[in-house]
Length: 335
Ligand code: GDP
Image (cartoon, rainbow, N blue to C red; front, side, top):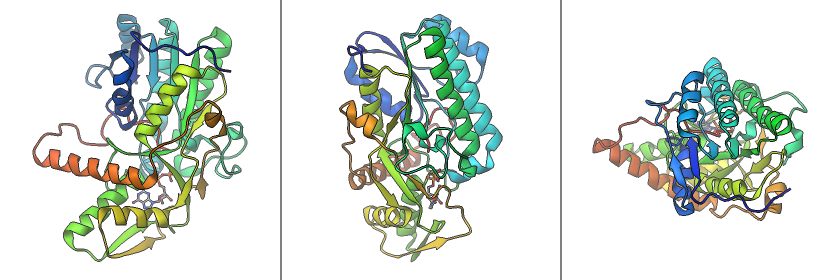
């Protein structure tokens, strides 16, 4: 499975989607690898544009690619923007993977998502449950695009011998997240809602759904660390799940966020909102065998995420933020 460690030192490393939550965490983590970092802002390179991607790869010839660019969002964004989630994510995957192949890239990592697994697959979700049953309808377009990316990586590996690998992160949160009130994922949505309720003195905060679904969460800097570890040590056609190995109900998550934010009112549940898939917990035994495990607890992660949210809104108030969260290419790996 693992060959001798793959070196990043002094290699040109392209982080596709460096402006997003995952990409920016990869950039932070790569700072200690002495790699020559390559990035391309959306204004200079639209990853959905095949000709532009080919031209950029021909000009820059990255030796290593982290494909962390994606159009991402929470349960509502996925459900409503179905065409965009399918088209954008398919286009980004096919363009970057083919261009990496055509330009002699030594190694590529494709970041997928835990939503690629069937809605009712046995928990915890094993990598080999892929394509064994129907997908969760609320995020089927995103999942189909990510499954296509996984299959491209597999096919390029088997037909051309490219050292391309796929990783499947669980639900992520942390610095650089999207805090849109409707289109974000649950952790940033609740951080914002509880914070605003605390400021306004509201006595009740509404959480979507029944509160009963279970989700696993991973702080994005833990994900970035796992990605670097796997880039260096893993080379195999089989996907690797990346998670914390622990899940929690949405109701308990809401209590944890309320406590971190300091909201002391009541919490109610809006059951007219979708629950989505009943449970999403990844089997992380393959990852554990490579010698990696998550380090940032959920409690610590929520504290860090809340602090980064406060920094963001303080920055916005001072006119420092130029790019509204959630409106950019490169977030990657919703779940
Ligand atoms: P999912 O894992 O694809 O379902 O992604 P989400 O992070 O969007 O949602 C996870 C769970 O949190 C679902 O059961 C949602 O119904 C629930 N949830 C509760 N409140 C919210 C909220 O304010 N925003 C979002 N996105 N989800 C929420």
